[in-house]
Length: 179
Image (cartoon, rainbow, N blue to C red; front, side, top):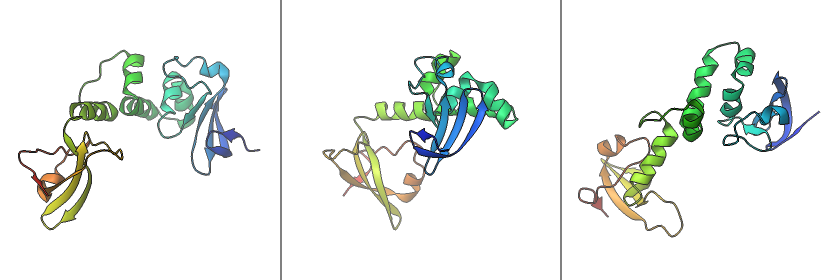
Protein backbone atom coordinates (compact mmCIF):
# COMPACT_ATOMS: atom_id res chain seq x y z
CA UNK A 1 0.00 0.00 0.00
CA UNK A 2 1.42 3.37 -1.04
CA UNK A 3 2.09 5.97 1.61
CA UNK A 4 1.63 9.66 0.89
CA UNK A 5 4.94 11.53 1.08
CA UNK A 6 5.89 15.17 0.33
CA UNK A 7 7.16 13.85 -3.04
CA UNK A 8 4.06 11.87 -4.01
CA UNK A 9 2.88 8.32 -3.40
CA UNK A 10 5.60 5.96 -2.26
CA UNK A 11 6.63 3.13 -4.54
CA UNK A 12 8.60 1.37 -1.83
CA UNK A 13 9.51 1.74 1.80
CA UNK A 14 12.17 0.27 4.01
CA UNK A 15 12.29 0.38 7.78
CA UNK A 16 15.73 1.36 9.06
CA UNK A 17 14.59 0.76 12.63
CA UNK A 18 11.53 1.39 14.75
CA UNK A 19 10.21 4.88 13.93
CA UNK A 20 12.57 5.53 10.97
CA UNK A 21 11.37 4.61 7.49
CA UNK A 22 12.95 5.36 4.13
CA UNK A 23 10.54 5.99 1.24
CA UNK A 24 11.06 6.16 -2.51
CA UNK A 25 8.70 7.69 -5.05
CA UNK A 26 8.73 7.99 -8.83
CA UNK A 27 10.70 11.22 -8.65
CA UNK A 28 12.30 11.54 -5.24
CA UNK A 29 12.10 10.22 -1.72
CA UNK A 30 13.30 10.59 1.78
CA UNK A 31 13.18 9.50 5.37
CA UNK A 32 10.28 9.83 7.75
CA UNK A 33 10.65 9.92 11.51
CA UNK A 34 7.82 9.03 13.82
CA UNK A 35 6.73 11.88 16.12
CA UNK A 36 8.57 10.20 19.00
CA UNK A 37 11.80 10.04 17.00
CA UNK A 38 11.37 13.49 15.48
CA UNK A 39 11.06 15.23 18.84
CA UNK A 40 14.60 14.00 19.66
CA UNK A 41 15.99 16.02 16.72
CA UNK A 42 17.22 19.39 18.05
CA UNK A 43 14.68 22.09 17.23
CA UNK A 44 17.14 24.08 15.10
CA UNK A 45 17.54 21.03 12.81
CA UNK A 46 14.04 19.58 13.01
CA UNK A 47 11.47 19.45 10.21
CA UNK A 48 8.14 19.73 12.01
CA UNK A 49 6.47 17.16 9.75
CA UNK A 50 9.19 14.54 10.32
CA UNK A 51 10.10 14.27 6.61
CA UNK A 52 13.72 14.64 5.44
CA UNK A 53 14.44 14.49 1.71
CA UNK A 54 16.88 11.93 0.33
CA UNK A 55 19.55 14.14 -1.25
CA UNK A 56 20.89 15.97 1.80
CA UNK A 57 18.35 16.26 4.62
CA UNK A 58 18.59 12.53 5.40
CA UNK A 59 21.87 13.35 7.15
CA UNK A 60 19.99 15.28 9.85
CA UNK A 61 18.16 12.28 11.34
CA UNK A 62 21.18 10.10 10.53
CA UNK A 63 23.38 12.31 12.73
CA UNK A 64 20.87 11.97 15.57
CA UNK A 65 20.33 8.21 15.12
CA UNK A 66 23.58 6.98 13.52
CA UNK A 67 23.10 3.46 14.84
CA UNK A 68 20.10 2.99 12.50
CA UNK A 69 22.20 3.86 9.45
CA UNK A 70 25.20 1.78 10.58
CA UNK A 71 22.94 -1.22 11.27
CA UNK A 72 21.09 -0.84 7.96
CA UNK A 73 24.13 -0.23 5.74
CA UNK A 74 26.41 -2.54 7.69
CA UNK A 75 29.43 -0.28 7.65
CA UNK A 76 31.06 2.41 9.72
CA UNK A 77 31.81 4.34 6.48
CA UNK A 78 28.30 5.76 6.63
CA UNK A 79 29.32 7.83 9.68
CA UNK A 80 31.84 9.78 7.58
CA UNK A 81 29.19 10.27 4.87
CA UNK A 82 26.70 11.61 7.43
CA UNK A 83 29.20 14.13 8.78
CA UNK A 84 30.39 15.14 5.31
CA UNK A 85 26.83 15.72 4.09
CA UNK A 86 25.96 17.88 7.09
CA UNK A 87 29.23 19.81 6.84
CA UNK A 88 28.85 20.56 3.15
CA UNK A 89 25.12 21.27 2.93
CA UNK A 90 24.11 22.36 6.44
CA UNK A 91 27.26 23.96 7.88
CA UNK A 92 25.38 25.93 10.55
CA UNK A 93 23.72 22.77 11.86
CA UNK A 94 27.06 20.93 11.71
CA UNK A 95 28.91 23.64 13.63
CA UNK A 96 26.28 23.82 16.36
CA UNK A 97 25.66 20.05 16.62
CA UNK A 98 29.35 19.10 16.81
CA UNK A 99 30.33 22.33 18.62
CA UNK A 100 33.05 23.26 16.13
CA UNK A 101 34.06 26.27 14.06
CA UNK A 102 34.11 25.69 10.32
CA UNK A 103 37.16 27.02 8.54
CA UNK A 104 37.43 28.22 4.96
CA UNK A 105 37.70 25.30 2.57
CA UNK A 106 35.98 22.78 4.87
CA UNK A 107 32.38 23.24 3.68
CA UNK A 108 31.06 23.77 0.17
CA UNK A 109 27.95 25.67 1.29
CA UNK A 110 29.81 27.77 3.83
CA UNK A 111 32.41 28.73 1.20
CA UNK A 112 29.66 29.51 -1.34
CA UNK A 113 27.95 31.86 1.15
CA UNK A 114 31.25 33.59 1.89
CA UNK A 115 32.02 33.93 -1.84
CA UNK A 116 28.60 35.49 -2.42
CA UNK A 117 28.98 37.87 0.55
CA UNK A 118 32.52 38.87 -0.42
CA UNK A 119 31.57 39.50 -4.06
CA UNK A 120 28.15 41.15 -3.72
CA UNK A 121 29.53 44.36 -5.30
CA UNK A 122 31.66 42.66 -7.96
CA UNK A 123 30.59 41.40 -11.36
CA UNK A 124 30.35 37.60 -11.26
CA UNK A 125 29.83 35.47 -14.37
CA UNK A 126 26.37 33.94 -14.76
CA UNK A 127 26.68 32.66 -18.33
CA UNK A 128 29.59 31.75 -20.62
CA UNK A 129 30.13 30.56 -24.18
CA UNK A 130 33.37 29.59 -25.93
CA UNK A 131 34.67 31.69 -28.80
CA UNK A 132 38.07 30.76 -30.32
CA UNK A 133 40.73 31.39 -27.65
CA UNK A 134 38.32 33.42 -25.56
CA UNK A 135 35.15 32.94 -23.57
CA UNK A 136 32.36 35.46 -23.90
CA UNK A 137 30.69 35.88 -20.51
CA UNK A 138 27.72 37.69 -19.07
CA UNK A 139 28.18 38.96 -15.53
CA UNK A 140 25.97 40.69 -12.98
CA UNK A 141 26.68 42.30 -9.60
CA UNK A 142 27.09 39.49 -7.12
CA UNK A 143 26.13 36.95 -9.79
CA UNK A 144 22.46 37.76 -9.26
CA UNK A 145 20.01 36.35 -11.79
CA UNK A 146 17.05 38.64 -11.14
CA UNK A 147 15.19 40.17 -14.10
CA UNK A 148 16.32 43.67 -13.12
CA UNK A 149 20.02 42.76 -12.67
CA UNK A 150 22.30 44.85 -14.87
CA UNK A 151 24.14 42.51 -17.24
CA UNK A 152 27.55 43.28 -18.70
CA UNK A 153 29.41 41.24 -21.31
CA UNK A 154 33.15 40.55 -21.19
CA UNK A 155 35.75 38.63 -23.16
CA UNK A 156 38.02 36.40 -21.05
CA UNK A 157 40.97 34.29 -22.21
CA UNK A 158 39.88 30.65 -22.26
CA UNK A 159 42.85 29.50 -20.18
CA UNK A 160 42.06 32.03 -17.44
CA UNK A 161 38.37 31.17 -17.40
CA UNK A 162 39.10 27.44 -17.18
CA UNK A 163 40.98 28.09 -13.93
CA UNK A 164 37.99 29.75 -12.23
CA UNK A 165 37.04 28.89 -8.68
CA UNK A 166 34.28 26.45 -7.85
CA UNK A 167 31.91 29.22 -6.73
CA UNK A 168 32.26 31.52 -9.71
CA UNK A 169 34.44 33.79 -11.79
CA UNK A 170 34.87 37.37 -10.64
CA UNK A 171 35.41 40.03 -13.31
CA UNK A 172 38.38 42.34 -12.85
CA UNK A 173 37.12 45.60 -14.37
CA UNK A 174 40.72 46.83 -14.77
CA UNK A 175 41.82 43.78 -16.79
CA UNK A 176 38.87 42.11 -18.49
CA UNK A 177 37.63 43.55 -21.77
CA UNK A 178 34.02 44.62 -21.84
CA UNK A 179 32.29 44.13 -25.18
